Image (cartoon, rainbow, N blue to C red; front, side, top):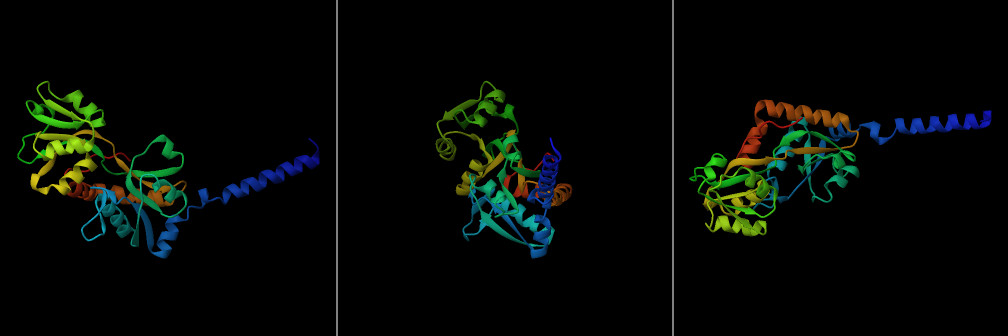
Length: 265
């Protein structure tokens, strides 16, 4: 390589390095921007009770909405809630339409390639539910009882592993049929996901349904734009303090009927 080519190569590498140093990945302006404008935009669900749904006053409510409001309060800023769906919640972070996504977001390797995650803030789970008067505290108490479950779902697989031989498991083809069997009194208990149960309990308060025991836990995390470490670490501080004070447990009890429990960092 002659001197001219070597010089061009060095200049090119310097330009690339400079561009990398000033890329948005390293800028980390989200937290500073939020504090400067005294407002944070948080993407939330409105069709996924009890985590996020529209109340009778037409305003969003649920565990995720409470968490969004809580974080804004701890930051000392106003909150702008932006409804999202499962399909567009990650793009909202990538296009800076929201600083955080609090929308029953599970963490996996594919998502970690495009966004970052805080510590977990709430459980997402499959569980057994029944009326308050039904004596069920664990799998052994299902002996001799009827339980509805959706065929092939996660809760079906988990229930099958632990149910005693005398449990009468009624399998249905979809969630609507599973719920209908419980609501109509065909079965004494139902094994389903927290969101399905939350929706069912909201629509049928007269049943007095409550959480009995967990089949499988899959915690929720808060999504942050890739590289925004200052914001992520600040939110982690808020989550850690809320965990220590019992505030996370209070939110989970309010909306899920169970404490948040031991959540991963």
